[in-house]
Length: 459
Image 1 (tube, rainbow, N blue to C red):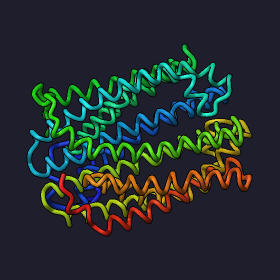
Image 2 (image 1 turned 90 degrees about the vertical axis):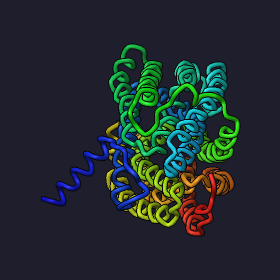
Image 3 (image 1 turned 90 degrees about the horizontal axis):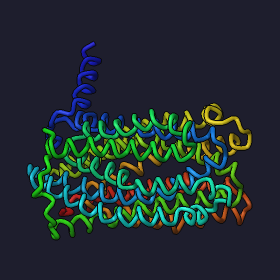
Image 4 (image 1 turned 30 degrees about the horizontal axis):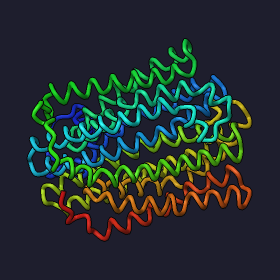
């Protein structure tokens, strides 16, 4: 009973979010305290992704295809947000490790300034060129006609997406994982409540409206905690005075990180288009349902990886590189154990999982096949995520970017096209290319992490 009580107490402490010094004491406890809220944060986000596609799937193939094609492009926005978030996490974590929360808040505020300027361009472009975006992704005329309004709303509300993920990166760098969890919970719960209601009254565009409202509400909560909260960071007006030296540091870390995720997103877009182009709407719909289920389990694993990034950054700031290395290795081990269970789940229960969302035989067939193929590489996904996020947390964003470029654009996309068109495997070829590329990324990123050059990097 004593062990169970200790575990329960740790879970309560992690969710409560009391200020902790992650540069001292047990590494295992530090991982648990950071990882639990980070996993819970992203778990509800993944629940929303499934709820969203569940209700959208009731609107038919065109609706599923529209959401999938739009979100594959919207992922580019996520890439910019995650890139800036990565820079914010790395710099804020270093300053917190150095016991300098004032400079940490200042760096976080500068990332918000950069975010607003970038988002203005993205939003205007998306609203103006929504039909062109869908056409470029391979959508037929009917999908473009029905889905353009959904795409416009999603791009128009992109500031909420950007800020939600960026500010959570700031909280994570500071070790305030519980606040990051609550903000995404607020956003996701509102999404889950509004999604079926708005889809009922407004159709497909209702899903977009619900998403924008949910995301924006989460941002309001984040801003309240930043400006009025009692956490490690508290922003004031003076922090928003433009500091070009700090902005330069953020950009130097952030642009490779942004490009890193744009590369991954671009590869996903290419594969999404390839599936639609070679096998039609049913394959595209099955692929999108499988991807949502993939994301459902990837996001909790990503939460563990974010814990590694925070621990690496803070311990390097405290001049404890060996503790940073040990933190990353132990987190990777935990991720492998988790992903092993997911692999078994996808291989054994792929059919009932896909049938939960649709009973269209053609869609189910493609969904089951892709889910099983994706599942075969889950252990390697887990290793790759922790290793690349650990490098990112150290501020070494260039190495993961190069790895992504070579493995995704130089290898995965040509390999997928070779299998799909050269060997006439069609959608199956695109499915197979995903776990193969992720396995290579895991091996290469583990090699570079063990070389240890990141341990001496100055941020």
